[in-house]
Length: 122
Image 1 (cartoon, rainbow, N blue to C red):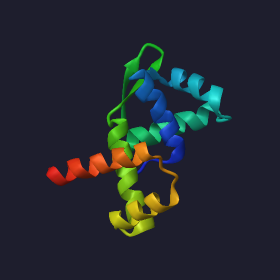
Image 2 (cartoon, helix red, strand yellow):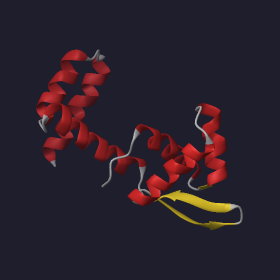
Image 3 (cartoon, rainbow, N blue to C red):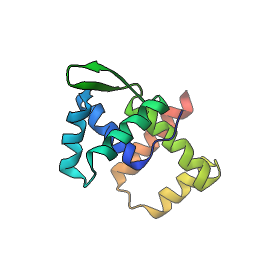
Image 4 (spheres, helix red, strand yellow):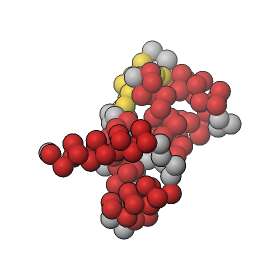
């Protein structure tokens, strides 16, 4: 699965929210929250098409774009990449760092313990 840049994530969030959108609609949404030019946004759409993360079909006013990968699928790629890059693929090191460095409530710890217990029984 391809890696997605931070800027491409912003484009994807628009498509995940709307399920599909024309290029003009994506530009309109992103210009409200970024200082990107329409050409930049259209370049990001093209990159995502080339990576196979989104698809398109002809519409009345240009292409209509839609996600081919879910947010969960893209997040899984990012998690694996982060784990390999930062923790050399060792999930125990990552979890140990998280548990010792983050402020967790007793409820957070209970929820994590439940997840670990469920994982153990699989």
